Length: 346
Image (cartoon, rainbow, N blue to C red; front, side, top):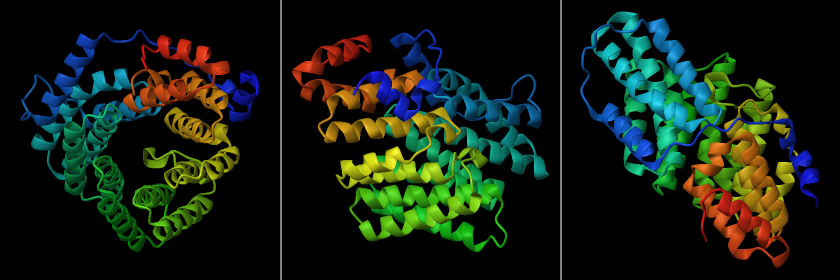
């Protein structure tokens, strides 16, 4: 299949991305050290504490930047934001303090997500824990459910798949039991927790629990009726299909993964991070299927949407190496040239 045909099938030709000047290794290391310091130091009073509306706008900006896959930019934003929020949580009182804790939970959620993508397990765990504690301090059941997603992800990243399944399922049940007339925010957090639990259950080969949680998430997606981005979840019917692709891969069923991928309306997915993730999973499915040309083409399509998903993530570099190592002669040269363009060596 020609590249333009497959990219059109995936829908990625509808998107373009502007690639920023990459950071040097020294700049990346300095940024990581600054984030580590911000996560661990005590709050220090500054000349002026930002107002809550300013902090809320900054958290929303960090969320949007992350979901646009501009990871180096959001990583540079986070240390100052986290420091300001920690000071706000320590100095405000009443409803303002509860709001500050909710914003802190969101900011630490972003930090943990970035660190997980960078495979910095220690700092990711710390940021995820900070998010959960801030969510609890906010006294918001919805925020507690939202932050449970990132600690579940951290548990999975550490190989604790049964614990992750239990935590996601329990958090979803607690949220569901408290809702008589769920809002779009409620349904989105609830559905995303179910999806997290399903992915974790698949990682320890629990097909029954996986299917049960997926079906419940699908029902939540139908109730919501569209793919939105409530509570920064990107949840909806197409997001459920994206997780079906990932889960089919976990069970070694590349054919089912590709079938589910073909059912996805990628243009309906509201954020680039989700689009790139499902394209990368589909690339892995084609590789497992022995279709190296399609695996490479859709990998490149993911790079068109989200360059930093390709250039900065160790997991994606491993996928590039796998394609290069097993490609047939007819595609090996193109695969090698692409790997070299990313600075990836076999």
